[in-house]
Length: 270
Ligand code: ARG
Image (cartoon, rainbow, N blue to C red; front, side, top):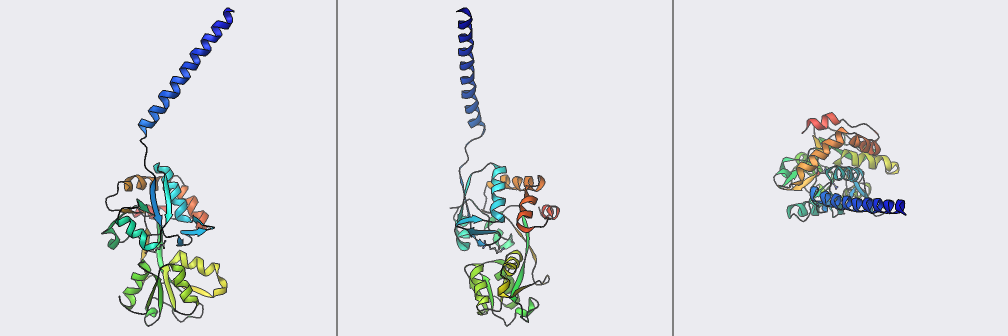
């Protein structure tokens, strides 16, 4: 009898202690980490291998990078495929918090938007039929060139053939621009090297090749894009350096591109 009551007493005591522990633990947790809102992150998921739809799901290098960054920075988010022009409109109107969409950081865009540290090195290249006589950027003069509207590919072509040259054919997505080329309506497409190189490789039947011209096309760096003055920039810049340093970036890069990235060069751009 005595033994039993001592045991019961100890049990009750332990129960009360653990209840207190759980209570104070959870309230301390929530006050230490104030609830962050779910971010609305927008993209144009027509740009494989960076962001594209696979069975209706947004997939790609950028998608994996975003996931890793949000985890590091401690944010929940929803990635929404809105299209290229709406990406810019949403950030301008501040209806979205951020975009990851293979977006090149440049001084023109920096007037209206803020950017993260660079996370990817790219350059524009030229996609042409295998039997094309086009061998350089300069050869684009007098040719019909298809681009995705409002991309750096368009700007680069404008520099070569003139801003309002009617030979520049602009399309809503890069896939439509490439279709114009393969159906004979254009002589070349200018876009980010990774995108057109992958297309040429994955569609050998289309008989396409990619032309590199380092003089005509500058190196470009992709960044996360924010509305001007966004408070998120600092948190995500920290996260970018974390995934550079802990190997996560390299792992994702190798998964998509099968080669090792030059993290040192990317960091040198900060
Ligand atoms: N890098 C180019 C630019 O910033 C093209 C990006 C297009 N991205 C996309 N998801 N469609 O202008």
